[in-house]
Image 1 (tube, rainbow, N blue to C red):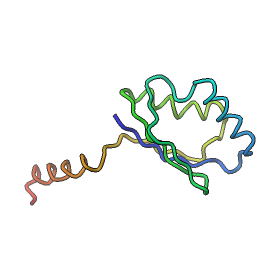
Image 2 (image 1 turned 90 degrees about the vertical axis):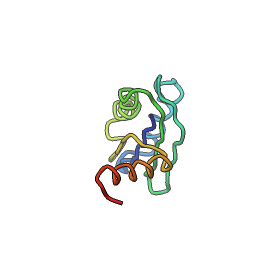
Image 3 (image 1 turned 45 degrees about the vertical axis):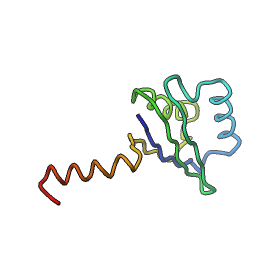
Image 4 (image 1 turned 180 degrees about the horizontal axis):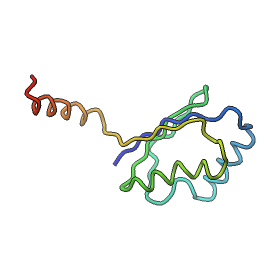
Length: 104
């Protein structure tokens, strides 16, 4: 399954602290955790970005995001994570729903 996370960094955390946390998690192979394949990890100049992951279990995705919070309280200002599908798969689902509801 695909999961997409929209994240926003906490601007009140010092850049040096943020970099130390990132170094700790990525260099020690804690991130990504077992069972999670990171497909994209993009950031913006405004301190927010997306993380696209592939995982069979929601628990593994939970672990992937929560590690950052555990490693540094307040690392993120906010995160939003949800299962996702490629748009090529979403469009036919919408049509199936309309058909099931008797709409054209």
